[in-house]
Image 1: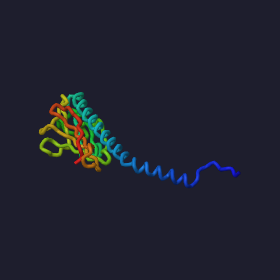
Image 2: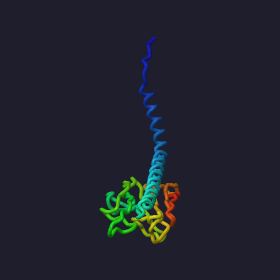
Image 3: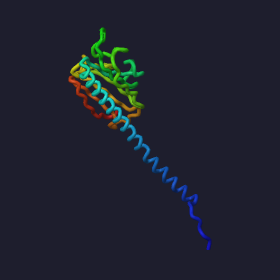
Image 4: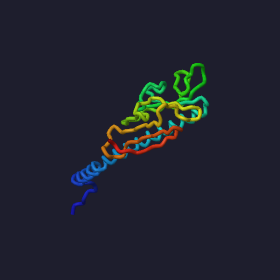
Length: 182
């Protein structure tokens, strides 16, 4: 009687690979959904943390501070999708209260733009807002309140609950809401 060699036959290997391929094909769309959801949650949390930091720095400095869309992390020259920076107002001659003044105000934090997401800030009339200042009491300096940041993934399946909206009230309180993709 011939002794059988320990190992795997070609047929067994092909069957195992086929089963693995089927499991990956079934699980991949679900994995993409989880990744999209995690990206949305991380960006949402980063924005809320940045808003809280901007408010606390405004109160701490007693001059104000704010947050704005920024491409380069040194100026308020960008859209929210490009990233944002948090600053603290510094008292000096000619410094605008609640507005970012280059080479004068202190940049506290810069956050790079989120990947594969669109982020916009609008006021109640639907006008895009790129900068939000806070007074020394932590209240937003904006003419048309409340404000809303809207986070939408680039690939947003219709009817799925992936859109996040961060609303800010007149007193500066932020709350996060989930919405369905359009």
